[in-house]
Every structure is written in C-alpha cells, then in structure tokens.
Length: 226
Image (cartoon, rainbow, N blue to C red):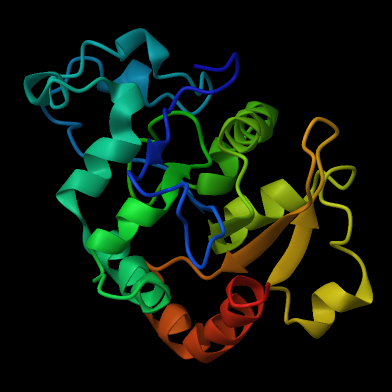
C-alpha cells in the first residue's frame, strides 16, 4: 500500500488485456458508511476533519464478517454490484465482445478518489477532498500504469484538474472543444501520457442518461483509436 493511499484498488483478472488493448482505470468519488446507528466507530471513522478511516481497517463490524478490511472497499463494493456499477458496466461492455455489465469489470481497475469513508451518501464531497487524495491517485496510476482513466463526476474531476503541472492541457482550447470530457495526465516517472475522460457520475441518472451520446463519442475516439 502506498504512503498516501488507503483503499486498495480492485484490479480485474483481465486488466492487462484491457479494452481494445488499453488498460483502463475507473475512478469514482467516495465510499460512504450507512451504519451510523450501530457502529461504535462510526463518528471517528467517518470524521470529515480527520479524513482517516485507517485506524479501523480491521475492525469494521460490517466488513470483518466478510473477511474484508475497510481498505478492500473497492473489491467489496464491486462484489455487491450496486446500481452505479451496473450502470457504468452497461456502458463499458460494448467495448468487450461477449461481456455484460457485470463481467466487463474483469477488464478494468477501480477505486474511489477520496481516501476515507464519508458519513453519508449526501455528505458534501468537496469538503471530503484533500491534497492527500491526489497523491494517492498518483500512487495508483504509477502502480497500474493505465492508458485511460474514467473519472466519475465533477468533484473528483475538478480535484484532479487543479493539479495543472500534471494535468497539463485542462485550460487549452481542445478541452473545451471536447465539451470538457478529455484532458491528459503526465507524471514525471510515467513513460506515457494518460487520457482522462471525465464523465457524469452514474448516480446522477438524469445527467448521465442525457450525456451518454457524448460520452460514447469521446470514449470511442479514445478506445478505438490505435
């Protein structure tokens, strides 16, 4: 585990195969805890000032019976295949013959941007973001060496783009010409540029549905081009 990172990314068994030969990392927003009523660790684990759930990594009353640590949340949440994962999988499976909205996750990697559990689904995610999260994001990129990163939602997208030394073309005309969907990440220790595709969050159903034609257009442009 990296110095800044808490959550261990889910890495599909066919991640190296990827989508049309391109390794794809999916970055969501944040994990939240729904066990306020009975977990004695809830307040401290989800504290929006401390932003650190690591103390309870092996002590969670919900994860421990599943033989999972809190840091395994990306794999644990995908195993449950909640609606947002089905929805994004439904979009992705068109890029893998014979897959569906569940099995396509075998071909990608996934984690969330914010590196602790927030206290509710409606917690103000911008307040949850810290500089640590971008450092953790970079650790994951360096480890997995993706060619393409899908970033869900404006909060994680904006947080990543604030780091203009690494996300170098955010304020160029090409970004706006592509409706704000595509920019590029360049890290000193990475021997390639990584394409970032910033999507609406799949939980924002109305926006997600309305924007699907544009998302497909730009995803096709990135994934289907040699």
